[in-house]
Every structure is written in structure tokens, then in C-alpha cells.
Length: 323
Image 1 (cartoon, rainbow, N blue to C red):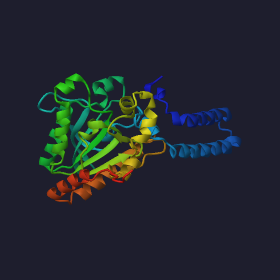
Image 2: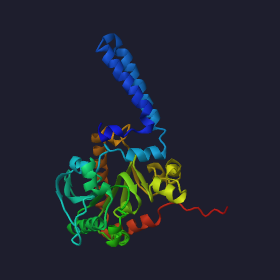
Image 3: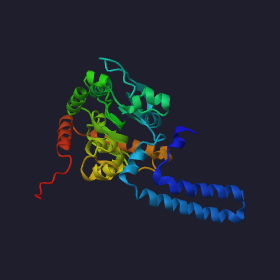
Image 4: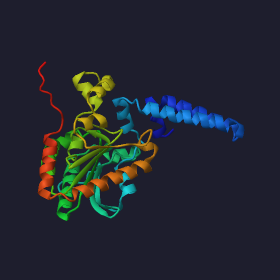
């Protein structure tokens, strides 16, 4: 059994059972025209069931969808929406972090610098990519490419998909906290448009360390949070099993973040999630990037930086109401 087959989404249990029933009926009737109408009726009921289930997802359901092993990753988007991709390696200080993919590319006739976190698609790749957990050299690599983009006059596209920055001792020894803080500071002075898109998990400083931009988009079933639900439950409630309860509190869904002005736009996913119809989500992501790049290209650099700074200074909603 493959890794993908083992990854069952709890909210899809009823859908899977219904699908098996329809498939069994198809085999039984074997193309008999007398049963064609019955199969068609059941398929319509299945579609209605899918719409109902996906209109009632909990925040924890969204987290699980964002982690689905078949969900498109950064390398898939690069392959699908860009041409002439030329990968650039290394931070010119320590080494090359394989958790980061970045380089020059074309999206239609738009030249860009694209960077993103890559988790890997199988066990070997996940180990090689450190499960998308970025080390200090990865963050320095991102900043090197962003600064290069500014010198070349190219917009930056930053794709976020990480469970968090790498927490190992060696990462701390090489300045993990410092380099994330340094990236946050420097991204506010990069004089070229920065388009950020959360495509899967956008967790903690690992995401924010390359997530300051002029516009922030988010896929419908991605999540963006200061900490994972498991981590929050372990720290605050001393019980990681309360992750579902915590997910409801963290306001990590795209809809919540749009209300709080953390993100600017939600990109709708195909029914069932991006992994069910990658081509559709590739087209929508490509349209989002091209549209935002075009609108940002008309803004003078000094105005762009002022707007970027103001955007992050005014994020969130603070209540001053007395209890």
C-alpha cells in the first residue's frame, strides 16, 4: 500500500464509502443500459454529498488537507506554471538548504524570482528536503535571491509550505532565530514587488521568515499560524491530543485570516482539495501571480515600501473594550 493510500481524511469516510458502492454497482451491471440511470443518480448524490461535507469542514480538517501527501508542492507549481526555470543554490556562507527551492523563471512573458519551501513527495525526498523545515542557510539563501531579484528588477514570488523552521541544535548554533529576524527586517527594504502565497502549511517563523510581501494570498485549504495545533496544545494545555480543540481557537483558516487582514485574497481550491485537481489550482495560482505582479509593477519603489510597512503594522484586530 502506498503512502498516499494510507493517508485517509476522516471527513471523507462517508464519501469514500459512497464511491465504493458506486464503483461496485458499475462492475455488477457491466455497462447494462438498464442501470445507467441508477448509476447516474447515485453519482449526482455523491457530488451533492461532497459539496455538503466540504462546506462543513472544521479548522482541523483544513490542517489535514494541507498536509495531504498528494497535495501539490513548490516544485510542482514551478514545473506547472513556469518555463526556463534556472535553480540557484547556496547562501554563500555555509551551504545549500534543500528545504528551499529558488531561482529565475518565466511565467508566460513575466520574468520572476521564485522561492519556496519543498517538503518532498516520498520518504527519500522528505528526508533530503528535511520535511520542508528550513535551516539558517535556507533563510539566507532566500534573502540572497530576493536581493538579487531587486538588483535585476524582477518581482519575487514566495511559496510557503512548512511545518516550521528546523528546531535542531545545529540550526540554533548557526543562528536560526537571528536569521529569521534579519530576514523580517530586510524584506521590508527589498525594492521590488513581493508576492507571497501560502500553498499548504504556513507555520510559525519558518513561514514568516520568507513571508513578508506586498500581497499575501492563501489557498482555501491551507493554514497559516504562529504555531501548529499540536504544538500549541502541548505547550498551553499540556496535552497534544487536544489539537482539534486548539485548531478552532487559533484562527488559522483562510476565512479567519482574511477577516483579520492577515491575508489579502483566498484562492478557491477544487472540490476535495488541490490534490484532487492539480491542473485547476495551477491555473488559478498562475492567474493570481500574474494579476498581482501587473498591478504592483505600476507602484514606485518608495511607495511600495511604505505600503508594505503599513500593511504589516496594521494587521490584526485589537479590541480595547473593557470587561
